[in-house]
Image (cartoon, rainbow, N blue to C red; front, side, top):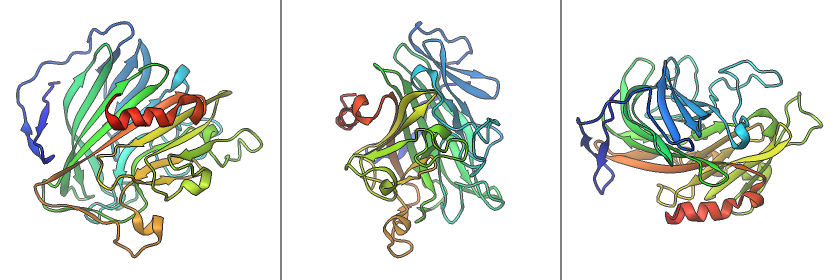
Length: 330
């Protein structure tokens, strides 16, 4: 495995992939409280302080994804199914694979679902795997393909894992390139930077959890629960009980992102996604209003931060954490 970092010019387009690199091995040495990123079989394992944080799955799937995702106290923050069978979980939406990035209409191809005619996000290569005392990085090059294998475009995903203070963080930065002609993200709610929360955190309980404590949703504008769906906001926080403790997952939309503040595809059954393209569905505007074109040869970059925290939104200081992210102070 070779580390081959890429460069982008000021316009955000690819300036090329460097051929030079260094050999990554499974025995990367990190500090006891550091972040370890290493390939283990057909996955990449991320550990913080010697404990599992998450694993990156990139083979034999319709799209790469992170699973499991363990929050404070190593509590599971995302659903197990369909990766694993687990008691008390609904078996709906098999394409909701823990934590992932995909969109339901890219040049007319569905990269979101796993329907018979859906396309795929295909892992091409690792550009970087690095460990360190404060953070670890997985950087990948991927192809966006139709069911027939036609390449629509490419993307580079940089996932940076850290655990400052009392939170765990995944910075998910994605640069999408129109490498094979114009690339159009179509106007659909089915997308995009997303995760599926563990079942006990749901706003609307499944049949196994009726009568038990449920989750809560709040966004940066003070909108709560079901009313957050389709609204624009700088961040959304979804909190709820896991094994008797209140924990939460917040997703931050960086102010430099195209169409910031984004719209949110956040559901009462635990789906949680930032989607800058689904304006037709979210605002009941004419079909195609949300179409977003990346001209041939150009690139666009989106930055997201996923914060896993203990306590509710106020206790975790989510608003202050977002301000630090937005201003680059953390």
